Length: 411
Ligand code: PLP
Image (cartoon, rainbow, N blue to C red):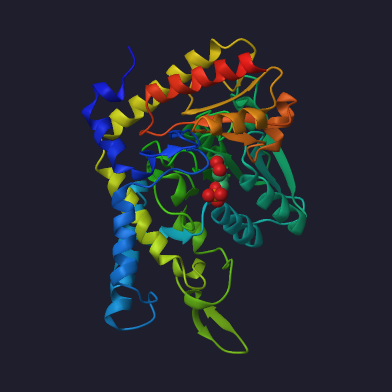
């Protein structure tokens, strides 16, 4: 039996926290199923950011006045909240960036400069978002290193045996997504990290699609780096996180220069600040960081096991429904899957589907989903993707199903 918003007072309350959902789009009740691209913000996050916009503003870390102290305090409080959310050992291991993309670029550049030389190798997987491919390619080109790829099967499951074969004594780092943004696959990262560590290879986890949905414990995982974005976890845009083990961050050179990252500047030599500041050049998006802290506070107040169960229910319900549509193919059916369903319907261009669904008030993502290699794997140009958050309802999935049936009949 499906859980429905009407049967669960907690979900009714959660839904009320997200004012954007309570409106009409194109004259129809708004149904937001593009959460993997960006999630919506609860009133609590909006209020916290508004409070700071209205009452407190001063550039952080740089002055002794009241306003600067207020924002610096809130910024560092957010860092502590992120540390706690990830169970990192110390706040110094939490670096604020502009998002997952910047976090991965930071590691690819700085780790690459410190530890990667000509002839070395980096491993990524076939199901990565471009943000976890291109920075490594750029670094490999710069350093004369090679990129190796772990393939996945048509069910969307990584071929783990390949990892053992691909790791050699030249492998310097392995980068893998926790949850695929196209296939929804939840990768067995504990196992992958253990395999890599057995051969002394550090691991970066792209957590953009996992951090909003699952509890993350970087110490239990023993990952070396973990990256995620604020805007996908009910926080603001422009803020992201890189967790890194101190043993690596201390040895990595800065990524960008200027601002808080310096210790002392002279024309003959500049020395650098300690972590995390060494990696936070220029004025950071401190309002964004404060908003992210509010989003984490909001998530911490929810019943996480209930949310995980409920999101799984939404995935099962949507898969079951969509499979009833003749000519609809779902890409990625891993046994361990998050709330992402990518599909195509025979004879209907995904962009037409996306545009017509929008006219019915339903927002889905269409296109190449920033994952060209996944498109190539299945030999398709584009896909339609519905992705869920804990504020979605079974009724909304039913509305998607009915809309798709109607559109199929139309074509
Ligand atoms: N990695 C994955 C798995 C993603 O889904 C995304 C965004 O969709 C990114 C990285 C990039 O995130 P951002 O654009 O917030 O930097």
